[in-house]
Amino acid sequence: MDAMFRAIRWSAPLVAVIVLSLSNLRAQTLHGCITGSPVKKAALGYYFGDKRLVADSVALDKEGCFVYRGSKMRPGFYTFFLDTTHAFDFFYGGSPVSFAGSYTALRAVDFRDVDNQKFQEFQNIGLVVQRDYEGGSLTAEQAQAAYNERTLAWEAANGTTRFGQLLRARNPMGARTAVEPGGVERWTRAYWSELPLSDPAYFRSPFFHAAITLFFDKAIIQDPDTVVSALNGFFDLPKDSAAQKYAVAFLTNKYETSNVMGHEKAFVWLVNKYYRTGYATWEKPESLAKILKKADDIGMNLIGLRAPDFGYTAYDGSSHRLKETLGSYTLLAFYDATCGHCQENMPKFLEIHQKYATKGLKTVAITNELTLIEWKSFVERKGMVGVPGWTNGSDTAIDRVTFRHYYHIPTTPTVLVLDKDHKIIAKSLAPEDLEDFLSKKLP
Image (cartoon, rainbow, N blue to C red; front, side, top):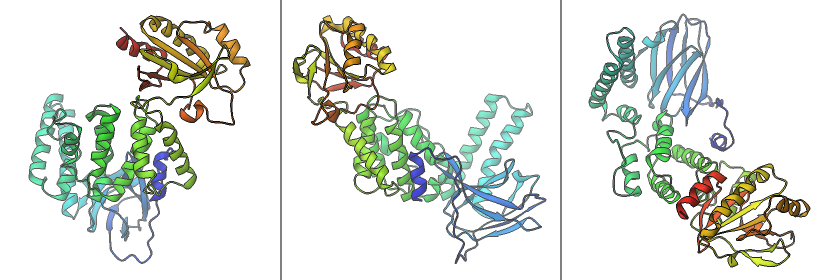
């Protein structure tokens, strides 16, 4: 299990093989016959987030029959794969599942247990509606209405059963068409309240990952404080332990790699709550150390925090500190004169500075280089010397604390916007985004 969770963060393969031990197994989990099958080994696939993994394989005898005694098989939705074009879904809830079918007609597999009979009944709703639509007896609008009506009727008849609750969870918004009022805490509870988070079968379904993605991508405002509040509410809810671990790993990776400004606050919150406390046991020590360091570095530059002060040497050789820069807004840019993106974008930042300097914008442009020959040539060629309100700075020290200790600079240029109190209000902006941001602050 730990290996699976590590795969979340480091580009998981689409298919992984999890071999279940068959030693000392007594319970008969699955048995059946598929007549006419040329395939003599079938795979049992299950859901893990947005992927399908292979839990085990079963050998079919000459009549196409098998008995599988996998007592470690967790409840959930599975697929019985004979080959890439011959497969069918079934539900395992903890009780034995049995079926019989034909290789050439797998949609008509005959299940003997109630859950899968209900599952097949539900699947047939879509098949019948699709057949009527393709046959011309229903328009697209009529087909959608018929499908909605019949699925609602199925839910009304079966919604109180365990299996019915799991299928209802395919639509986490339920009858809602908008966010409910009352704040993010109330909305978080409302969204997740009717979803079977504590049922291990919900985790091994296509619905759990989809519900997380819908909620954190579209059902809440992407403001970092709102995201953190939603995370706090979501993780406080009781849930299956495997689902909780998956959510921690998935959402940590999501917010670590997000391109939305401010989302690193959610990453830092998750790291502090779960990785720093020893919960994330699936991470190897060296990987964990990197995650903690990154959170520490980012944690000093979160939106809403005051920008750490530091000293630097200006282009003319004079000494200064960031806190001396007083403007309505301050653009703090870290760059490297030899960096291609910097050579392209720093002149654009200069143009933006000149446009808003008369309205109170100040700029502190700090080179990240330790050798300043290229830097001095660069600032002269690009016209960055002697510009009112624009300061060029550097710090070549390697034997003491510099700006590099206080600021996370994963790429250059790295840009932050500070307010008059030097609070960070924006970061990681491309020139066009900075222009748009300042046009609203300094109209």
